[in-house]
Image 1 (cartoon, rainbow, N blue to C red):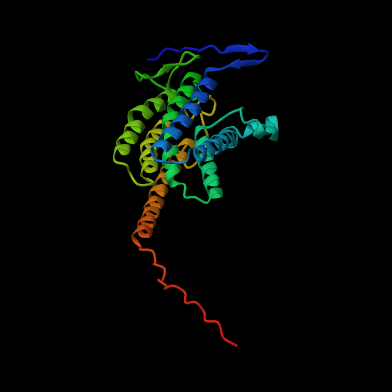
Image 2: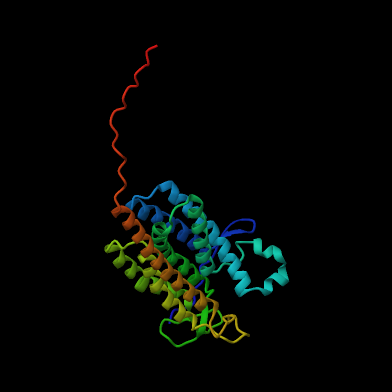
Length: 284
């Protein structure tokens, strides 16, 4: 059993403090961004273009994370605090909302550039998998993903004295033992566009789907969550992530075939013309 612990916040001035959760989330963004640039450089991608992609992914990711947290998990807060709550991006985030928001941001960014974004998506999702570890470490230390009571040896003592599954901790471990190995093995084979997205999504989704089954279902407890057709929003989102990976794989195959076809089709040679004959001037 993991004992309960509490990492104190560092006071700055007035109401402002440095929270462990915020530090780890910021670390996830910085580490993920640096890996995007590193992976992109290895594949000869334009650095300025990748920086723009990072900006769009981060901004849209935070917006999506907040909107999903409020609209899906805590819709009652809108009635209590008003519609202004939707604009307080710092007040409540959802990891899946961040993922889907980042996907939308990347799609819009590369749509505006008029470029196919699958190659870039494969680069960015690898950095996302690296950063996910720090994001889940933030959830682990904040105890914001409590599960059912348990006597499992990796269960954790919570502040109320009850040993529960800490789903943030479990997911952090899953990233290390499943997602990272799958990603680095796939990288060795230099896969075509779409493969990396499929591999990472397929490695992550089953673990998250299972972990969400460990959430409590008692509406009177803090670890309960709404369900649709018996599935939590996290489980439905995990299925959506897997579907996105499959879609990237299919589009990557189509894109690769089009590129190969274009490269194998010889360009039409321009007709060879002889030198122009000088026109004879008419004598008058």
